[in-house]
Length: 240
Image (cartoon, rainbow, N blue to C red; front, side):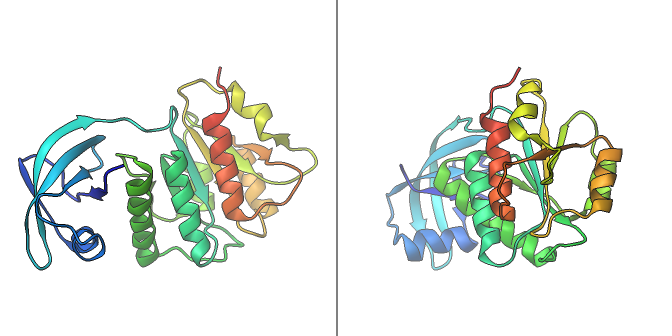
């Protein structure tokens, strides 16, 4: 696969200039030369074949040769709302969600959260999305939403989505029992709690607002493992 680079602005002209992180990667990591060809994408769903026209110290000018729409998105829109884990596990979570086709990720603030999402951490997560999209070939970026309180999520999410939250209990339904019954084009939003799980008050709030409680098996999963398992169940299970 050709090297892929992300354009912050839409590709509309015959020439485009890369700067910042992407130019640094192309110039100082890949040691690119004039005349070499790369692939550009701009979050529009299109990807573009481009040739390096000129190189400056911190920028690269490229000639756009051709462009085509290439859809590598999942068949349904899946949102993962998750209480972020600590440290490098956040990067792993975002990378894998991007790779398997999650549409949107919402960092959650819950009673037992171990990591506090703020402006700088959200920006860092967005950069992880770009890097993962470059690697896996997505031409649309997974959206990273602003951090949201769990109570607000349960209250504001509309019934147009299939709304599920993971919570281990003897009376929960396995995810496979619920997901196949959704309409083929119905968006799914899956709420995943922190390591300590949702509190009973949070569980009651979810159920009062029409969310369905599910389990992801008979083992207790780490937050990031639960998020990936939920996303795969939603994307890969057959639909009505």
